[in-house]
Amino acid sequence: MRLRPHRRTLVVWSRYAGPDSCGLPWFTQVARPRRIRRCIRTGALLTIIGLMRLARAVQADWRLPAGVVLTMVGVMLRSCPAGLVMLPGLLFLVVAILDPASPRPARTRRAELERELGAYSTPAERRDLEATLDLYPDGVTYELRDILARQVAGRP
Image (cartoon, rainbow, N blue to C red; front, top):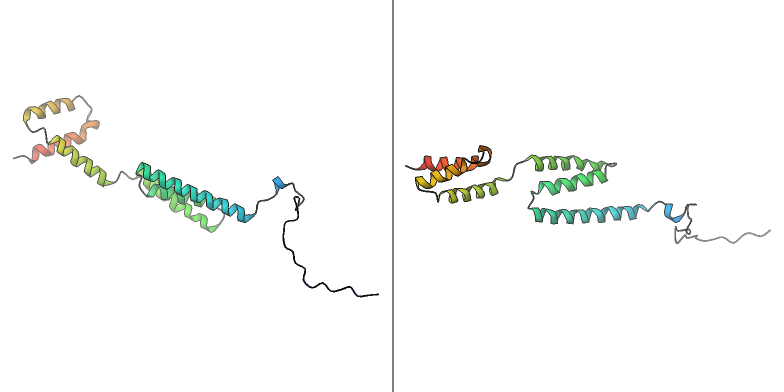
């Protein structure tokens, strides 16, 4: 009897064992976690880019895109502790939807209305404007009527 030669180091260069490594066809094999993570990262990046373009186009408040992104990340990662970012995302969405428009554009619009209504300075012009406003419901013209009443009250 003879001793077998000792094998030094046995190295496996690749884990890939062929088209049927697990006994399954290639289209039913489980995808590698690295590939899935890369797809998730790519999808999240494209989503963020799309939301940034949407926010720029719509002049949206920053809370709406932030809420959408955090909610989507929370849904994608719902099985791990990082899925808790869904809660702040939902809060951002609720606040962005229910919060009224920011005061700066409303102030500039009101100042422009006051300037335009200041052009009606004579009593005859005011009567004509009030007669025109009487044709519409108060719910539509309340802001114009308020500005006119303040202008009349502010005159000596």
